[in-house]
Length: 231
Image 1 (cartoon, rainbow, N blue to C red):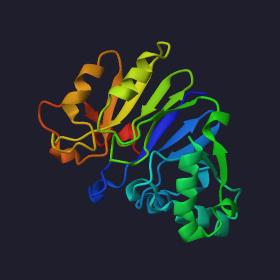
Image 2: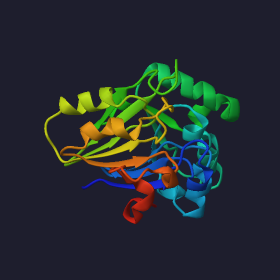
Image 3: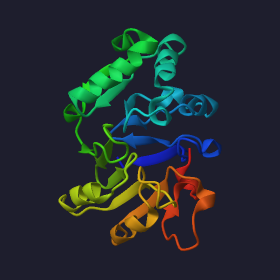
């Protein structure tokens, strides 16, 4: 079954006109929600997509990536009365951080979600990008591997570690979705010129930005301008 990705938003934390960056990925028979920032739950509701989501994975715990997760879980339980969504987590430490965050709102997160170690789910590679978005913050990029590959950077100031990991994998058709900034002083995200050396042989799209700020010399296509990639 071929993967299909659709974005629910492509903006950064303050680019509210473009909504928080998040995506739905159809992958190995599941519908996986990648990140659940503060605009994501309302977007899922407005597009009648909440019921499709059965798995969730997070890149990190900033509010524009997890801010409506608790509301989403409560809705699945109280309104839909559906089976608990599965939250895939890449490390025990990250699970502890996530459950501590959710416990403030849900008291008992395990009542509303099933937490499953990522290494028990075939086809997803977590790339540890600790401290490369915000000092002291745990972040992850993800590589979704099937007949082809989809790469999702999360928030990443330096792309090297992600592309070094990709280079060590067997050659395969690969589509990279990478956060991007057009301001060289924004070190929490990857300045677009730093991605240029990695364009060769890979399909690449930029997200997590204000698309109106893209300079004329930017060759990287932006998700916002690709209707086939938007939910």
